[in-house]
Length: 126
Image (tube, rainbow, N blue to C red):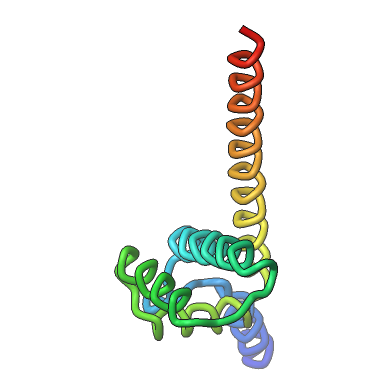
């Protein structure tokens, strides 16, 4: 009987909330916001440098501004990134959210460009 109770206790403990995020880790929604800003910085930098992505002082300064704006340190971000990399379910959720947001933003920008071109065309024909 003691063995059965011991085995059940082990099963219950092992089925505990392993997906719980420690308090020192940046919450998923905030982490996603930070990654979004970093993706935008990287895209602008890559476009500005003719498709050549490189780590330079300008990008690092912008990353630091993102960290500062979000009130996190570079170390907190790095530690959180490492935590999420080890937790595939969390990282998948973050990635899905980030991709969806990037797609929404791209659609907004494309629509704004389309409207701007249409207005410009309309003005030329008048």
